[in-house]
Length: 550
Figure 1 (cartoon, rainbow, N blue to C red):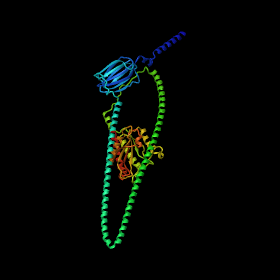
Figure 2: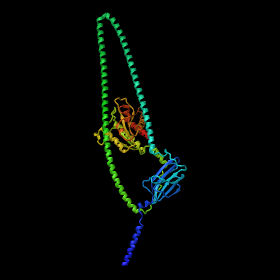
Figure 3: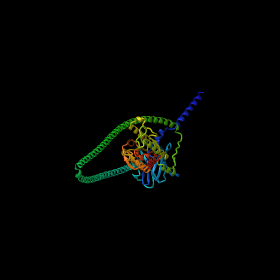
Figure 4: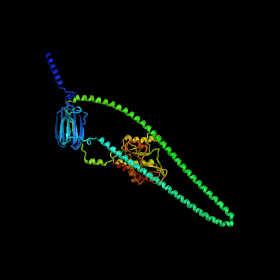
């Protein structure tokens, strides 16, 4: 019995020893015997491409070719792929289309190059970690071309600099033309004033001559009558002279009264302008202080959120590392299969349809001016600006959404935008409208208004933009919309003008404020209040948006 027990114990001990010796070797021990593939670089020459693979040591490689599509496959033996290496690299050359890299099996890294050009493979010592495997595509000798190796970011910066120079030159030309037009208007006004003064002097001389002629005739008649009734004629003459002097004095007093009223009106307008300018400066100062405060609070909040995210990310990475180590201990003997070629074909018809939908996916914010307790300007017959802007905005929304655009409105009915409602200040209400666009990450922002002036004959359509905007495209947006509005409404064009309006100054995307027309003008008030006028205004803005994105 004891012999059987001892024999059984020896058999169990032998089985445990065999199982321990057959356990899979950990990856940390296996990779010590493998070369590490830890970096790849691509260079472009004239008709050639050079691919440089950074390895820790020289390894055996095997190359092969397959068709449909044409590909060259390079297998690196006794090699492991560092997870930081980019796995899919598009090539910007006619000799090759794409490079894909994967860990084919535990000791082999496979590189698939979509190219059937002539290739040369060779090792070069040195580099970042000891050995470099060079793969040259193309029959010519590789010679690096700096222009071909420029990044998209470098090309974009050069293009942006060129656009900014052209925009600056255009602005200078427009400013010079504006100065010349203002000088011509001033000269014309001075000539018209001189002409009127000359006409007034001529009329006064003619009037004096007629009066003198009449006076002479009267005196001659009086002289003849004086021979009969000298005394009575003298009294009549004195009375007539007094009446003329009184009339002249009344005319002089009336003229002085009119001049006094005109001076008082001009002084009042000057005071109102000064008060308005002071309010604007105070409002800008308050806006600046609020923005600085909000920016500080935003930065502090972002810092706290960043620290919280970093802490969570560290915990997540530690958890994933523990789970990965646990899985690697169980799955080392299981084969791994990877699908190295997954292509999603895009037909030419899909691409053509996509190019026609210029507004598809664009985020557009429409701001109907005023609303709620703020009626805006009121026309001669009582039409309110807030109602006109809302009608046009809702009609414009239909047109844009029909073309695939994502439309966001700051208000959808007769209400204020700020959460404070009627208690909100002007700056809070305008800031709430800017916040809608900035939070949405909109592509463009359009604020719709109707103009007004004390003189009812004022009329026309105007586009406004903020000239110091970082986007540099607000002027183009305003100009495209203003041109198409004038074409649709038939109103006079008052041009595209720079401004300091809050909503176009404090939005992060290209923005414009459009004055459809003068609601203080009877004809334009009637047009903007009509169903046809609303549709034409919406169509004009829509056409301008299409021109801007086209």
